[in-house]
Length: 221
Length: 204
Image 1 (cartoon, chains in turn yellow, orange):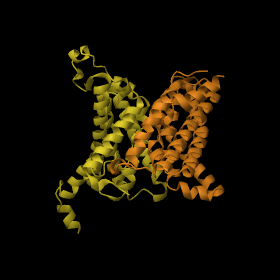
Image 2 (image 1 turned 135 degrees about the horizontal axis):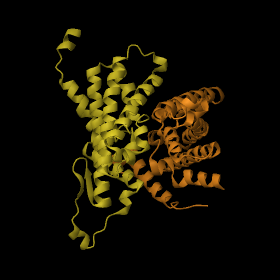
Image 3 (image 1 turned 90 degrees about the horizontal axis):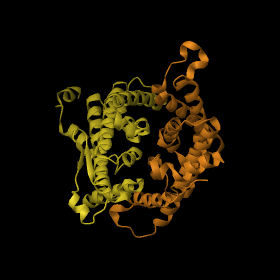
Image 4 (image 1 turned 90 degrees about the vertical axis):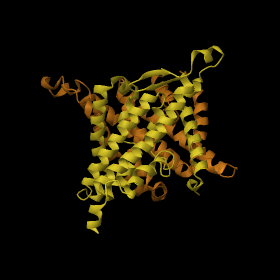
């Protein structure tokens, strides 16, 4: 048994599924409904969404690996506290890194960087996966869920920014004006509602609708 | 008057759920019946009212730049604010443990109904979010911080009870399959958020 496991290739079918499943059938945000707060709140601009998903993915991968390495020495009764401390320490590091290298974005994300600690995706994956699996599988699981989370964030931010202010802000490229001036001259106006909080809820609601309509097997109950 | 203002602002204008999406996970998961929603909502109010002042004291006496001046001159320039995440979450986790024990002792029925979600208050973003906003807003005294906690908790309570009431009724209406359940809850919350936007700019 253990021989078999050792010879398992790094990207076996099972391991690939760890990355691809969270993108659709077990997407952490839209199907498992975890980590919503930050997913909705940081999506006014694309660059915030992208940096936030990178931060969450980093914490998720490292946290998963650490907990998975320590899974045999963490006493069951105090595991939540241990996990919280690990995650909080990682988030402090991420926060300091963001402050050092992308200060503007870190200002805009404000309290939401700190709230990565209480992001249910992270606690959920630590509890459900890292506590019972080897570190490589846990790292992949973290990566998959991080991308699944980022996907929803980027989609929501794309629609919010495009229709809310007619631009897309991509890290490295700066603010790109997508909707040309001539359309504004014809009477088109930015939809101010898109910049307000409720619109992210609508977009996620519609995202879930489209996703489930395309994959009827996901409709529960 | 100032206290009332902070209360109204945190409960209605800057509503935890509709403006910042704090605590959405438990908000969506526990809002199927009004009874459990009231239970969780009250637990959140209680935890917020207890933890916000404690975190306020922690912030002003330990973490802030220069907060350690009471220890002596050599500590006067110390800035421990980078530790605030870990300190706040430790306070919150221990208070939640306390609440869990109290609820188990005094209301086993509620304990059974809340089940897994009581320990999860520790990772409810509403609690840590309130602590971090409290840190950002720099309240003048502990009273204001407590009222802020109370108001935020109250706003969260209203939100979860309202959505639970709507979801109880909506079970009987005809909704297209794919959007049933969570999808509909999102859109409903969005509509309620629009209504709450009406409070914008309201001040006493």
